[in-house]
Image 1 (cartoon, rainbow, N blue to C red):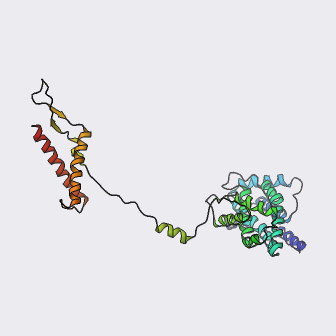
Image 2: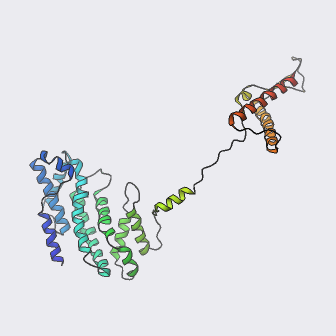
Image 3: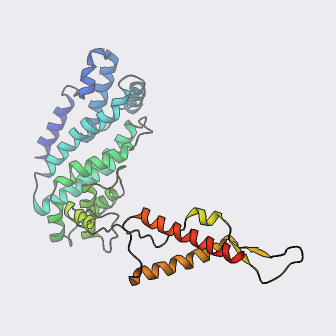
Length: 317
């Protein structure tokens, strides 16, 4: 069974080079050297998933080819080509191998596959695509996320873990912890939350980094959100703050026949507040008519302020 699988992978390396739609559109402009470099990268990656080792000086040649491609018009497609073509093909074969088993045998075979991927395939991919730096995700992160989404998420691990905890291979726990440490740049995805659910089964206690909420739960929380109410308790017109109040003082000064004392702004504020608070109390008691709009309340308060100023001026005279 395994030998036939390896023969299938070997046949992949002889398949024609698959191109992205963007690369196919400009394939007529590709030079022969560019196509040759792309073919060599494709063949090398397939051999890595096959379990073969790179030949002598092949790694250096691949690095130089990628550096040269990054300087051409195909440079912007190298990352996408690695994610959507090379990783997909290699991991699709791994998934087909895992799905040949069921139950406990599938769990143990997945453990072996992870050890081979983590200790052999992943370091070699990092070495081949070392020139692909400065991206949103590193080559290591792209490969681990692809393994999570294309292999792990296609296996019913949630059903296998509870019934095999006593026989759980150590590499399965390591796999879940390693994949849990890789974060998408746009925040936790549904796959990441599912991964944490698996981790909760094998690691205790486990502190969740994020917990996925269904649309129904989010809608329910939104409905219970109450907007704060804004209530105007009092209003002081600007004219009353700018015009100083005059009040007759008990002390007499020799240079003035009638001594006058100017109130400070604080005294003015307290005086206006007392008057308006008394009016507010009367309004609540039903002694003053109610006002429907803010403009009516402001007009009424302005009248009160003018009356107060007239009252204090009359006393000062």
